[in-house]
Length: 150
Image 1 (cartoon, helix red, strand yellow):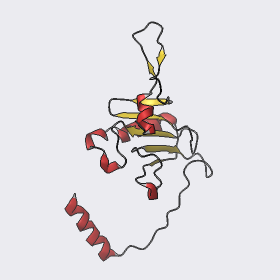
Image 2: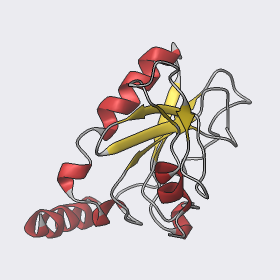
Image 3: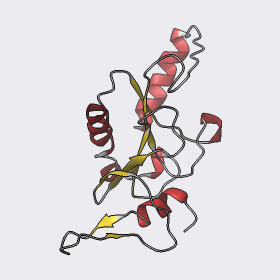
Image 4: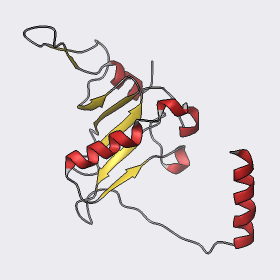
């Protein structure tokens, strides 16, 4: 299993509450994480190379490189979990980001959503938005093409 996020899911530290001493256990050879949330479909943890304090990742446990590779039923907790992390962090300004493919800046080949606090101009996600004037005829044609395939 080469995917780093699959290895993080597999290596998640668990508390065995059935034991009186509640020991921490980790799967040998896998990667530990600072887990924020876990269910049968979703895993969330703090990013170890954050853009800002509180940067977290929310991932489906189902492995897939791009959003279109993940079954819909495996995505239904993603935004509610990101929302809970945002609320719990107390952050007023933040980004929720999800990239697909190298040209779109995806570094890890497992779908993941970033929660990135934006406490000030320097910390958090820096972004440029080079808008262009849309051609209404081309946009209408594109709308019809997309709707025909949905």
